Length: 421
Ligand code: F3S
Image (tube, rainbow, N blue to C red; front, side, top):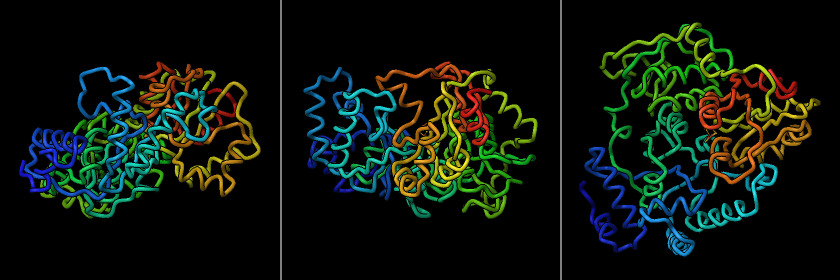
């Protein structure tokens, strides 16, 4: 890759070990992907919830790190500042309500130690997968380095900002260096549609948008879908289609003809290309996705999880309306997950109190999947889980072997109140 004088200096170690190592690995990444140069980024979304995991992104990687190694790395990291606006993906606990999640004090302390290092680095420790709605909103044409697959789809498709599906390590290097290799979604020629998806059924609920996204990711795998006959989504439906499309495939962007910025017409969306294939999403395809994501859904439900991707303030308001004056069943948990920014507003506006009065929990900072996979916590019963997020329905069955109900939000709330399907 061609380097500027400044980039060469960093590679030569003139700005310290952390930046040198970030530069070495970003060059390897760019070279592997065929990039010839770096471009500046304005925004990064990465992961930074456990410093002993962050340490593995830097040498030495092939050894088991001792506490002394992690302490030394923590000191070095805290002395290095990110170059651009940087937010982070959900972590493993809610910083305020970690006890209610069943986390122990040592997990809380280690997360807070990482949060403090992140703060010193200049990272905004947002712990949310919807940065594009709250704390990290790119403008049209901005080059970014983001690592949350659902957020990448939203960013490329609806905001017309440009990011590859970066991983946690490379996005952190980009945060530290303010650059990313110029390839993939950063280039016009790679943003043209490849496959047509003809939508021939009504999408009534946000979960139907999740089903459409899941269908598309599963069918196309890697490519850029162009949707025709699809109405404008609401903001929340846009979050669901972006979230679910990222689960079964490797898609980084899609077009909705007449709606998303790069698709005023079908011809513009394909940029002169012919579609490789046309897929039809009709009533029977929709039914098939619901059948696939619902795994033995009938019976007692232990856990209802809403907030994959994280719930917006509007959705929290609606959930509070549905729960007002009602109570969650005795042996069922209802968790609603959001960003700490939206939770603060929900507390201010009274929605959080209504939710908590119903016996449900409004959590921030986390993700059911990440939490019970990564945190040493006592896992509650997850024999049957109900969720309105297709991405979560996909993951919860594979990660915990849970039976799953997947459906719209209102139905999930009814299930939480009744205690089963
Ligand atoms: Fe967010 Fe976790 Fe879903 S990171 S998109 S809530 S799987």
